[in-house]
Length: 456
Image (tube, rainbow, N blue to C red):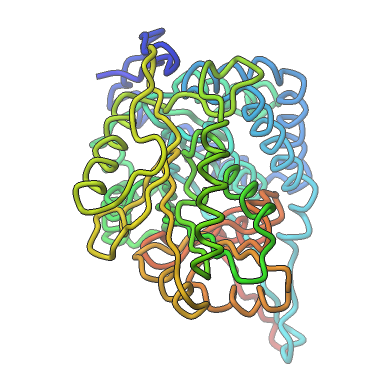
């Protein structure tokens, strides 16, 4: 077993990294815990923030190098890799700039002699996926390092060079050994780390199955856990929505990052039969224009999927959806070239007993629905076990807000396919998990809000 760099554009193995031994993994925990207890937690917030801010500077200085790891290891289209690197630098800067404000002591109304003091809690174990190899890490590391915690990071087995590169950022920025530690370890070692009392919090972005396993183990050990487990994000196209704008946003929202995003648009629900026919025709035309190809080509819009396993899983989902009565109106096949490429796909006539109705398609596969009423659109949007993101398109923004209030999701975007920002909380409800990353809520997940009261 090993961590492996496999170029998704060719399918070729580039480099391997062995798993660490149990002794190495727990030596890393020893170092992290010692640093937390003897040093890092006692440093002023401003000093910890300077390290994180310096990491942002280094990332911007080495932008091209860091983008190339993304393209090499998960096939990210180069210009989208640049977007990710820039966003990560912004996240690091955001917490460096706002950390002192977020962590400041707070008065308690009605209790003039009491206050809330925010303190770190210790070693945080993070388990992160491959689809945004830096962004997923930054959402944890930036906030928790500024808060005074230390981080053990277990990244996905398919992006080892990205994982090592991100760890170098903090080393080069002056973080002491143990503040941020990359681990090449396996499932059993992760379980043992969760069982260790010195690990005080666990966060995971991944599948429902992984989230259930990690959440169960953390719960048995009475540890705080944050879970982000994906979604089947609906886009509601209301009767007043300009279709041209909605079409462009749906195309980008479904195909960005080759469709491999938890909060990508997964389902389109159009209100009105005639408008549904028009939008489907427009989407078919736009999907036919999408250039699928080499992620390093500036003209490419959709690159390869991250792995052969991901590609085969999507092909299985498409086949099963069709077997259950779904109609593939565009795409649906593997692209005939080396690497892990899938044609951008649209599937309609999906009934509620179709497996795709409940599944998350993690790639450029769009489910398309048409309904007769707004109430039916909202019902259909909520008829899933997921609740991560949602999208509402309408010319009447006030009305769109009213509809957004009825969608069961952690985030709703109006008239846009997404608006990632360090200052917007990220997270979901239902089987999409719980807890938040980014913004002020993200720094508050793994801290002790200690009450201190003075007797008079």
